Image (cartoon, rainbow, N blue to C red; front, side, top):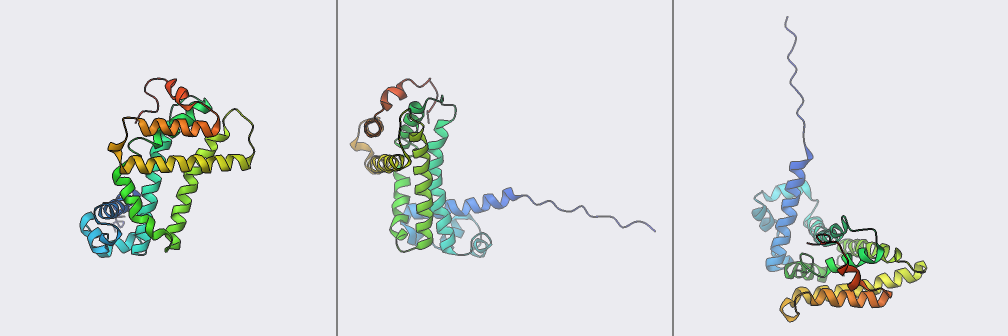
Length: 222
């Protein structure tokens, strides 16, 4: 009697599922950018992603769950785009802070589409506790990264001062990011970036413009 032939167990990979999930998030963001949150219906998202509406339930508990994931992806992408600019930058604290501030105030972070997406979500934040939690987490992630860079500066500062400085510097960056994204033609080339470097540097007592000028060629570029 011949032994039964064993059928090899099928190996499942996470990559396809992650890609499908990312495609749904990308579709939701595209629709919000085009017509606001109301345009991102389950049916429209499914059609844009090329899947059935029922498949969305496989990846997200609800439409709100998908909206939260899309907003998180948007905010994380901007923070990641900034953080990646520090790769390979010398361990000089002032230089690293200068690169970080500079990266937040030029493309791809400064972008009309990104601020339009942000505006599309932000009005829901106060009425949706789960979306508010996503917003708070994203805000603190960016602010904590900024505060860590400020803490590395060669000067004495306690935890309370570092927190206040990070809040103030973040507010300057946010305001300039908003204006630079919405009204790009109002400012000269590099003007928003330079204003940010000067303003944050003034708050912290360091010369970020000079530090950025001393960066080795090719580092900190988009």
